[in-house]
Image 1 (tube, one colour):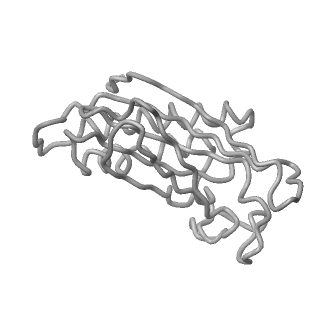
Image 2 (cartoon, one colour):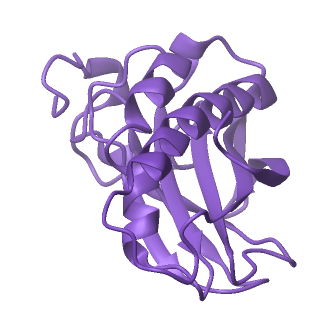
Length: 194
């Protein structure tokens, strides 16, 4: 593995009540985070292939950890998202190199299919700073009930020469969705939109 991982963490968030109403079954979000050394910290490098390859490794690893944490079969995953926070000696392009060229395919394999684009965010930050991971339906971008997000934070990451990479997977949409649009049960997943 090219990724020099200092720390891995996995969380599962369950919502059982919302606005005084029981949510049955509970809506669930899993987030898996890897804190890795930034091989290009403190210097400009033209060729970011090593970070792209690390993204491929982490897409599968973190996606599989999320599915396992939820205790579901990959096909039961409903939405996903990705995010990265670069420490102060890095640059936003380092996060982009991890997230965009190669992370998506192994994440899609981990959740079986994934016709829609994987929502993403990137930022620079330091230890204890929040990282928002946007979420969207894995097969149909027009499923509004799955427009969501989850926040992660690690008290000691990312350090100046690190990158914190997060992948989130859910087995449901938001609790009590009621803003219309395509229902998850109606999604065909052919074009990534509907």
